[in-house]
Image 1 (cartoon, helix red, strand yellow):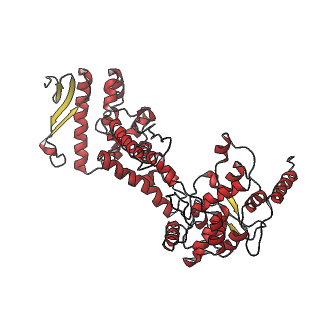
Image 2 (cartoon, helix red, strand yellow):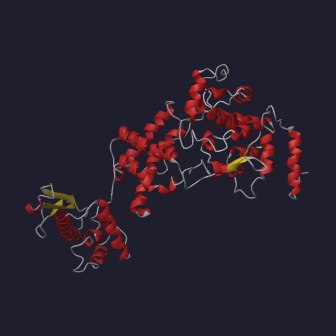
Image 3 (cartoon, helix red, strand yellow):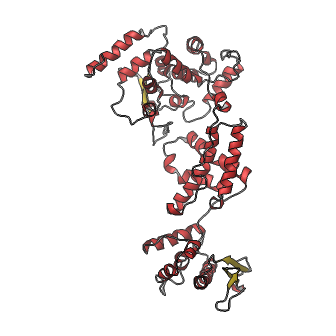
Length: 479
């Protein structure tokens, strides 16, 4: 029912609507013949005010289009929020204002002057500016820009891997739920998406950890959008907040994905003794030897820049750290991964053959796939234990290193120092105290090192005595 007081104001049930025909003069910039939208209020006085101002905002919008000015959602919203900020106000949507008081609307209208009536001030004050919005797949493309600080230290390979997580999540979401913009994702959409991953986990297709990552990527894209448009936190609605797929008591996917430690004898006699990978490539063989002897991840070794290799030091070692600038910049897994890694025996010999680092694989992503394929194709991996269906991979040397440290009698913290694991997580409390002396790291690593033709590790008991001597030298009591 149209009201008699103001043209374009219509009452439907108990809610007021704006309903106006588009003037022919604007048909070239406005494809719709009629504008029909809810004013989202039941209050007649509020509706009358909103109707007048909404019509004025429409004409301003059409005039701007006619003049060729940029009226994109993003630029309009930014202009509106900056204007309100200058007045000591925050953006409130029309819906929020409708739920407030008439006095609040009148207070906002008091800011209008003759000079601001035909500007963005009107829609800004009355919440008639749409929030910028993007389809989820577009958000995935924008993430490297929005989260620039997160990838500042990543090399090209690491950036591709990081970006692909969001692209894949957007594709999965669209496939399961449908095409959505960030702001149109409902709680029901989020619940349905969570149910999808719960179902895949329960059926054994994916681990709970993998499922939670896919949910997290969508949540992060929504949050990144809110941060980008500087929406106050009290106005944000992220339907994925708090969602988590709970892992089953026994997760067969996680169990089957756990890497099998390569047998110590195979590492010692075949990988290191026979240098079995030299038939594939010298660099790849040396990377694998260093990883096996130091417990490092493959990327920690083959991404090494020349300046982080210290072969002439009294204790030869290399440094694993974040590099934020230059051609060799790289991100590492976490802060705990930052550490010096001592070189001795076979690992020292391997690094001496590659004193400038591993140019063949630095910043690339094909080391593991090439090495694993070579070992499998030539049946060079050791035979699996009876009843085991999981396969060996070259990264299993890190798991073998853990077993060797346990066998040598190292405690949990000592193992964490060498592996680059979190000491705080192990202790369950904040970490105090200084870094581990490089000499002690060398002695710990010698406990699990393999002998070579020209070098032999000392007995573990003798190494323990050396560690105590260093600690006593520092003034610590060891007995």
